[in-house]
Image (tube, rainbow, N blue to C red; front, side, top):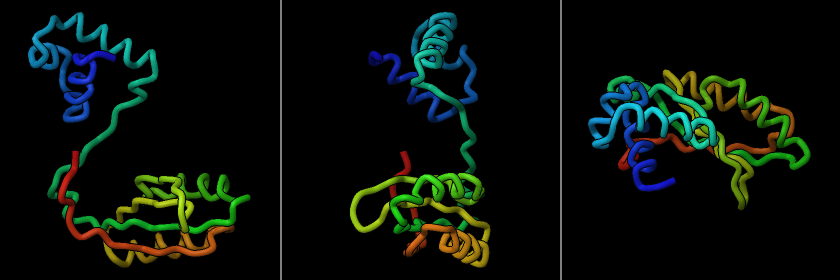
Length: 141
């Protein structure tokens, strides 16, 4: 990966739907060169997919929380599989310290969030959860 690949990734993070022509113009390169770089990044596994970013207005209507999870060690794979099936769980991180996982959760309301946290807490192997509702995002890169 060189500096141009890094710039290309930054542009794709900003808008994954940008056309190759638009990306080429911003990078000062030919469209075919940019297309080749994108294909190489995909083949090498650097780029594994594209996603949707939602508007600030939509995000403002969501209740977001971090759910810290303490788990029975032997059951952590099953807990991870179960959390993958919960649509409101947007991210899941394994961490060191007193918690085993931190789940980023987004819900349409406090009531929905409460139900999701209850659902997480009821999973086999989840010993304890601690939830922190996120108030504002100060940096989002």
